[in-house]
Image 1 (cartoon, rainbow, N blue to C red):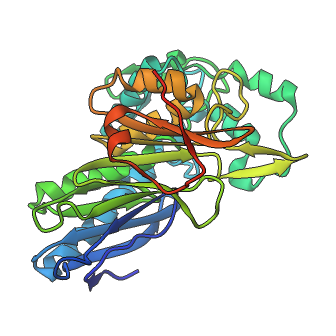
Image 2: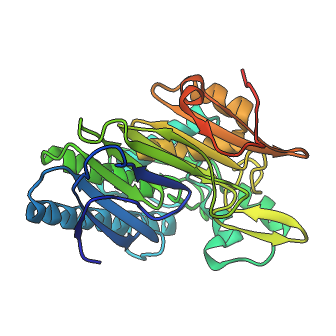
Length: 349
């Protein structure tokens, strides 16, 4: 798609919606472009009085950066670093792109901090479930149990810019972090080139920076996990990153039970302690990984661990027999506007 100059950025609806409200102020110029990459839509926007041609060129170069990340991290590309690493599981070390090595180190840190609730070595289980191929029923329980032997972040061995998987059949799946990493890389690239009022949105996970021009006007709209096309809550965000994990993103119904793509590494089955988790923090990749971890851990243990991480906040939506209820870290709860009047607040220590 071609870049365009406009006055308002309203990215497409995914798990999150980022919206800039200009109702009470003069219209704000923006140069933006939306392209398909990494299996989703990316929108890159630069706000303010900038040279439009230079901004369009910068955005085009930024999309090249996203494609570089995809070329190294996609399991669907046979020659990607991740595909090679998976093919060599149980064998020797594989040389990695510098960014990928850093990404795996960050993922391993989140795995340790979350007690394994986030684990990029869950690839054997995700391949078994086949959510990319729209499965019609869950796999056999014995097959799930067998794959569990191939899931353990401790068996991902990292040495400088090399990695190996300790056991044959192990697979890395970067679905919980690569997209966020691409968002952050583009965001940092734009700031390094002097742009100060930007938004990078990768399928609803995004990173923003504001100036006085847009301060106080940015809203994050959290998708309602049970009402299609509606929103559960919203909050303002001038600077920072956001990511959401929900059981409504990829799922199927089998015999009246919802089976979704967020698997618990300890069981190999879909996690059941939450229906939606939104994490706010300093980087999209970190928020992405922790959104998955908190979803698996559930509100009590998930928020306890989030509070131990510097700069992270979280909103957790859960369900019981009476309907939806939510809880959040204190700072986020104070500025959160819950739009579902029936959802109950529950304080979690």
